[in-house]
Length: 273
Image 1 (cartoon, one colour):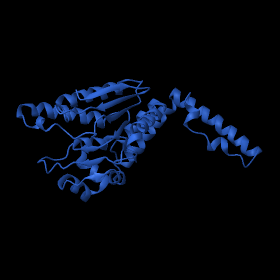
Image 2 (cartoon, rainbow, N blue to C red):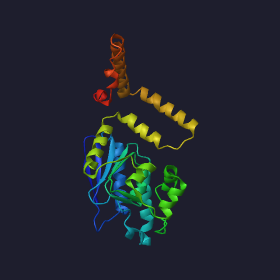
Image 3 (tube, rainbow, N blue to C red):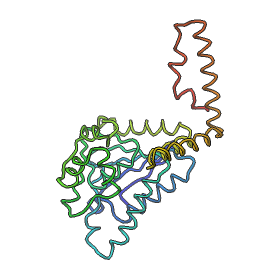
Image 4 (cartoon, rainbow, N blue to C red):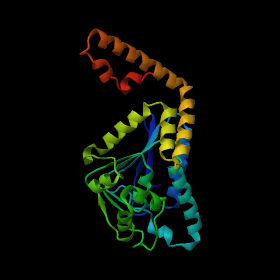
């Protein structure tokens, strides 16, 4: 299997290890990644999953040989759909450290990620029409929403490649990070996510990936908001915040120029809550 799994402190690391015999996604790859995501979502210990690559490319797409045997296409289609569903319906955030080319599914799957870091050498291409195919992974809907219809058409039909800078401008990439710092920065982000309240993090991720009307979204947000107000972790954090704010108000009354308490109130105050 062209990937390794590492269980870090509060998150998983999935590292692609593409080889000449397994240069891209095959049926077994889809199945293995689907299982990993499903198990991670079931585990209360896992806050997020970080995808990286140990090679020169992040992902060159599917193994083309998988498309050439008609007898295997039904199983390939089924396993890829299960994987796309696992990405779309994941309750835990997905983080990617893109260190080189992300082609085909290597690019389109990133549209379902929550944080995408990319090195300056990374490149994003999905020339599906050139391959005689059409976009997958709901990218025909998501990419035009991000880049506009004409840019999406150029990417899919004319094979337009996006640099890391282009991809950041389009909203596909969150930040550009020097190659030598890429994985370390991605792990720092995963660690930050792992320190956040699990239920709040999962519900926020789920909300952001839903497609609703404004009225439906307001009702859904209110329902989950009230649920979390009854959550023990949320109550501890709100109690701590109330104490901090009370102390800050008292400090400002005694010294109007003293604002350090509230200005320096960050997530580190809540790590034990």
